[in-house]
Image (tube, rainbow, N blue to C red; front, side):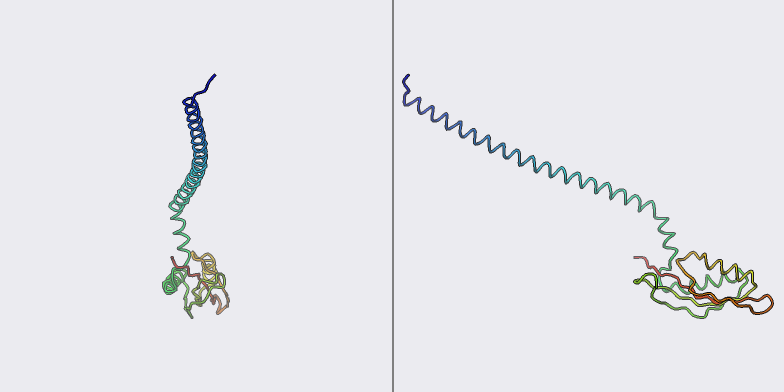
Length: 177
């Protein structure tokens, strides 16, 4: 069998085209793998973002559903030191309801012993009345609808049925952000 120059040229051309085809196929295979890895990374990012969106939606729903509870909690604190006199007016009104004479001795502001970055309104007052009324009023003070604590309570007996009490009360100030 005689191989002509033309056949050699065709054979060389065919081998050259086959080599180019194999190189192109190898390049495309590498590109498919790279694109596949990028796709997997993007799918992982999408999955992570969907999880974050679901968490955000759950938190947002909880925030919206808990607005009443947060309002109740916020009402348990004075929102500013300026609300101290308003509290005193309320306190004096409660005293009148119990038939007690309430005398405010001092109102001031002090750093909180419970939270270093908060303040407390310190109210010192005294009240007098019958034993039952004084004890009932003390129970009211123990159950105040504020984040408060009785710093000190001094009870005394005045006359036959007259009792007196001196109270140091601290109410936490927690301003709204």
